[in-house]
Every structure is written in C-alpha cells, then in structure tokens.
Amino acid sequence: NPDLPRFRITEVRKHGADSDHPWVIYGDKVYDITDWVPAHPGGQVILRAAGGSIDPYWNIFTIHKNQYVYDILSQYLIGYVDQADLVNGKPAQDQIEDPFENDPERHPSLITRTAKPRNAETPAEALTAQFLTPNELFYVRNHMWVPTVEDSKSDDYRLKVELLDGTMREYTLRELKTRFLSRKVTATLQCSGNRRKHMSDDSGRQTNGLPWTSGAISNASWEGVLLSDVLADAGFDISEAMTGSSETQHVQFMGLEAYGASIPIKKAIDPQGDVLLAYSMNDEPLPRDHGFPLRAIVPGHVAARSVKWLNHITLSDEESTSQWQRKDYKCFGPNQIKVDWDAAPAIQELPVQSAITTLKLGKWLDSKTEPNVLKNDQDQTVTSQNHPQQEISMSGYAFSGGGRSIIRVDVSLDGGGSWTQAYLLPDCVTKNGMPSPCQGHGAWSWKRWVFEGSVPLNAFKDKHGGRPDDPVAAAANSKSQDGDQKRCTTVLVKATDDAYNTQPESHAATWNFRGNLATAWHRVQVCTDC
Ligand code: MTE
Ligand code: MO
Image 1: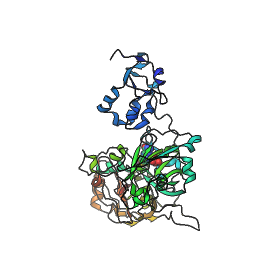
Image 2: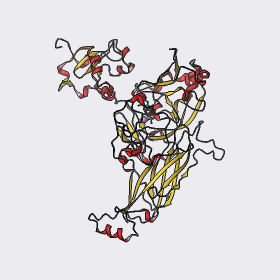
Image 3: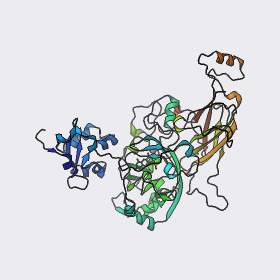
Image 4: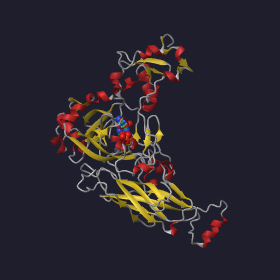
C-alpha cells in the first residue's frame, strides 16, 4: 500500500518496549504491535525487538518464519521505513540491533561451537581435571541472548509462581534467600546433544544440531532453595500431590528470554529429588551465562529442563508448550525421519554415559610422555610418533541420570575383544572428617575415572588387519603403494549404572535424526608410526 507513511528509523526508535505503542520493523515495513503483545504466544519477549528490527530475533526464533506468522504481522502494518534509511531495500546493518551485544565476556579456553547464540564446550583437558568444573569453563548452551539483570537490582528480581487455579504468588530473590532454608546440591548437567558429533561420525549419518564432542557436560555445586518448599509456600498441596491424585501434573519453567521447559510434578515434590531454585554455583553468584540471578536445577534430568534466568513457574495439567519440551529434545528410531513429535515422550532422566577425556601414550607420571593428546576437535584419533612403548593412560567421566550411581567403568584396548576396569576416583567419599563435596540425595554427579595399562602388542593392526608378528601381513604392508606403516587399535570405554544399565555398542543402533542422547561406547583410535 503505497499511500502508507514513511518513517525514519529515529522515529521508530521512540516506540520501544516502554512506549504505549511499541513498533517493530520487519524488512522495510513498520508495524504497530500494541495489540499483538497481549496475544503473542511468546509473551512480552516480542518487546525485546520493539523500536527496531524484528529480523534478528526471528532468525533466532525460527518458528516465526512461517506464513501464518507473517499473516498476523501484516494486520499491524502502519507504514514503511524511509528510503533515506534503506540500503538494498533493508535498514542498514549498523541500524539493526545485535540481540547478543550485551552477552558477557567468556573464557578463551571454552570451545565455541556457535558465537551467537553462545554455545561452547568445556575443553577436553578441563573435563576431568577437577571434580567441580570451574564456573568459567562450565559448558554453555544458550538458545538466545543472555538476559541482563543488574547486580545491584538482583535482590529485587521477581519470580512468579502460578498455581493450576490461577492463584499467583510473587517472590523477590531476597525473599527466597531469607524466608526459605538454603540447600546445596552437587549435580552434573549434560546437554541432550553431548557427543552428537560421535553419533554422526560413527554412524555415517548426519544429525540435526550442534556438533558437540564430549564437552557438553560439566559438574558443579549449586545452592538455592527447594522448589517444593516454594510451591508449598505458594499454596500448592504437596501431600495431595504425593498421593498422585492432584490435577497438577507438570511444573513449567519460563526464562526471561522466553526459553521454557517442564518437569513432571513427581520429580518436583520428591523429597529425594533435590530440585533447586539456585542462585549460586560453586559458592559464587550464578554467572550470567548460567542463569544469573536464578535458575532451576533438576538433578539427574537432561539439562534442557534446568531453565536459566528463571522468572515464572506455572503449575499445569500439561507439559510446557515450548518447542524445547514438545519437539527438539525427543528421540526416535533410526528409521524415523518424518516424525509425529507427539508420539515420543520428552527426554527427562538421562541414560548412562561415559567418555575418554584425556589419553596419553606412556606412563601417567612419566615426564617424557606427550602432553594430553585428546582434543575436542579431534577426539577420535590419537597418533603417536616415536613412541614404541605400549603404556597407555586415560581419564574420563561416567554419568547416569535419575540419581543412579556408576558402579563400574570398563575399558578395552583391543576394539572390544577384551575388557578391564578403570579406577573410579573417590570424589564423593568423606575424607579425614571433611564433609563430602557431594551433596544431595542421589548420585547426581559424574564419576571421574582413570586407567593405566599396556596395549597388547597384537592389538595394533595395520590397515590390512595384519599383526606385526604376522609375516604375510607384514609383506602385504610393505608392498602397499602409500607406504603407510601405521598400526592402530581402538580403545573403548563404557560404563554401567546401579540398575545395570549400560551403553549401546554402536551409534548406528541409537541414531536419531536430532542426534540426541549419543551414548554409544566412546571409541578412540590409537595409532603408532613405529
Ligand atoms: N534456560 C534458558 N532460559 N535458556 C536456554 O537457552 N538452555 C537449556 C538449559 N536451560 C537454556 C536454558 C539447555 S538445552 C541446556 S543444555 C542447559 O540450560 C545448559 O546450561 P548451562 O549453559 O548452564 O551449561
Ligand atoms: Mo541442551
């Protein structure tokens, strides 16, 4: 409609989140979204774009790239961006707000998978160096920008708690800290996509999602208040829910940037469940990347349920309607590509997992050994030059969901032909009268393991499958055109939890198009040039 007015961007800027008439720009068009805000499914978050372009947000919330949404928006068209502010038909790049411009600084050792939004792995060598991952090296999984809450205002930060009947209570962070008993829980968070890259590499099939190696998992000590204490205070009848007859079936969590997820009420009220509203991580205030000033911690469950920047809890008879609850974090069979999302349950408790995080050829404490030779980017092959010795040292983690503890970690040095045990570090054992660093009712933390051994000489095979002591193979090898004398073996790890669940042998067997829950035996090729 060419009769509609043209607006300078400076004019649009006056219609920001605080104005009575918020506007947004989409492409070269200007919309007055005043009437859309109350009806917007994502709620007030749309105001984040008010006074500027909505394009960068819709590049994040891709769900909007849909005719249905364009049709809604078109009802609110009021004009066009003035030609003077357009470059190639769009507002100039420097006129478009970067949704991530207020994201925090990050530690340079984190291995970035995407910068905006920030997704980064804990570096391999830091994974098992300490039982509690240092805050600045804890993996980061953000779907959107990091919301800004000023330090000085954080005690006035508000959490809304809404019961099934619509009753609403609000708590400031100060009230949470002073009116409720504080608790500490040591718990591992693992992304459902941890080791996704191993799944696609080993199965030879692509998966949809960030190509995490072994570092989308970390462990910390969390402090906060029990979710169940707050629900009871807000008027929720916990004892009725204990009998299983409450209409409330789910606790929905919503974060400030509109990420949402839910957990079953059963987990929320389990006196042994240790679900926290946490404000502290490893005895420091939550870092901004990890949910400052308040997040949910749901021990034993996939980390997607531990909602950061938590500002709204809703008790409901249904799960969160977010895409992260109803889609994305589900698994289907290896044959299923076009799926009915509703046909599979949302991932909650995690299955058993383990990985090798350091691998050295030569003895553990031998000063002549190579430095750590596993790297997140190539953590599937290790080649040793000039190291005829067969000693091998490894460390890693093992973890299971639901509070199930790891009872054993098995290691194979010959591709699964024979197995031996790794040593589980006694991280959670009380020492010399000191309190255990592990707090909470379940085995919520990973177990670190170490292994030292020798690779049997006949495990190393050349590419023809021959052993070094096999004259036929040796002859074949010497005749090979490429002159590649490398001999390799596959080193494997798998863990078993206290329900005797163990990991699948192959990723092909559990491949799913989203690449979730990649838990097959972690295999590292170890080769020698000698
Ligand atoms: N909460 C909010 N508000 N926004 C998010 O993007 N990501 C979830 C979960 N909680 C997310 C969130 C996912 S998928 C994971 S794996 C964990 O946070 C990551 O937590 P971390 O960044 O503290 O490691
Ligand atoms: Mo995740």
